[in-house]
Length: 581
Image 1 (cartoon, rainbow, N blue to C red):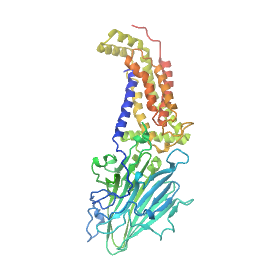
Image 2 (tube, helix red, strand yellow):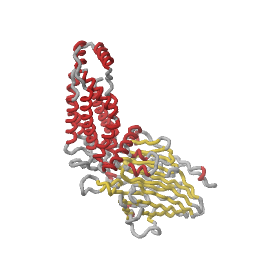
Image 3 (cartoon, rainbow, N blue to C red):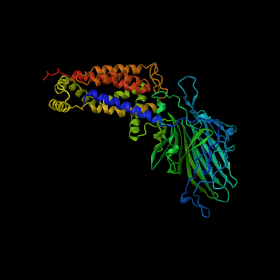
Image 4 (cartoon, rainbow, N blue to C red):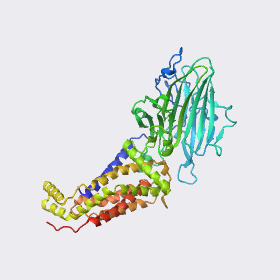
């Protein structure tokens, strides 16, 4: 197999991969039409407004049984319907160094990410991840339900606890303070109260939500806690060819100890059947490009994960929910249910700091675990280089240098094989002339030549083929890493996750590919292959014009170093061509 054929195979593999990515994109659900109404999706059986429409069987642990009290087996009947924005007029505003949030006792209604502008413009407003806008609806909700008895839901019940909070509805992280706590309370008619606190910490995108049930009545109290995310799929900011956002996963995801990481696109919420997944710990989330929201129950808390959709006046709401097991609280005692709510960017370091199994998969480097692991390793190296160089663009260049150094032994074998193949090109051309159309004899004669001259015809395959998974892993890593979002390199490259605005890097890539071709004379190569090879630099140049600038920077650096290495190896190993036999 000669180098030209190898390069063609590699090129067509890339094209096939891109076509596959495009096909997958076409399978995604179209952005649903929006409605001006904010009505909560109907839930005839679930007992939670806005939750899945089928009853979920949840069994309380035997250790929580209370003598004389019937054991809870199913979720309670439906609560009275209410608008999705009920209680919005009573919302409080919380501001930290990284978040600006509006919430009431049962829901986070709005969340702005203060350190992430929507665009690269200087006056751009921050990214709004949670919103009540009908076109971009995305909220986090939590409440309690009971069998035939009142309980606080995400719609009503919780009120700001004035005995534990200062007057007013604005909470701001004070200078020098590490956290700000927002308290709510619900008082039941049977001597039971639920004290809910939201804790926001400096520099953190995770919110601690703690419910303490205090039973001062004379009868046991039983209830289910539920936590859910509800949203309308967001419209993409860019639908240009090869836009990273276009190929980034958009939909629901969850993690259980039994089945590990799983996800479902919006289009498949219904088609793939209902989800009724028991779990201990784990997490549920909605993912989008660079950002996500997720409920993370306590590691020892048992529950059931579920998905659902509903439509109202043309608007489709998607819900991913965790229904906790029943909680029993005896008179004179209390119980606590805790969870964390992630609302923010896909920051690898902060996600890993949560020490939650599988949460790192929210950074959706790939649907395939090995590719995701490879991308994660590459990001670790890239992040280490950024700590040294302080610039993501130069870190990408440094990553290429390190990869070239690691693969140098393989590359040396590749270029040595190429040099030998170059040396015997005249002999191969003569064999083609001698045997003409007799392919079998030609192949036999070439194999004898390879054996006699100790030429390995596949010696250059491995380094070239190894570049394919590395290239794909880098594509997902550079596209998905929010750390590189709007990150500048030099001069005209001010966003490494966007395309080169002046196509300088794609043009440089064309020139490097053309120069590389000139180092490999195509003597004896089929004329059709020669024509295809001549067009390859242009094809790749046009294709790379729509790739993220960071990825093209990687490829240009790789091509430049490869050209220098190839020139040096050819000069070192090439010898005068032997006379024709």
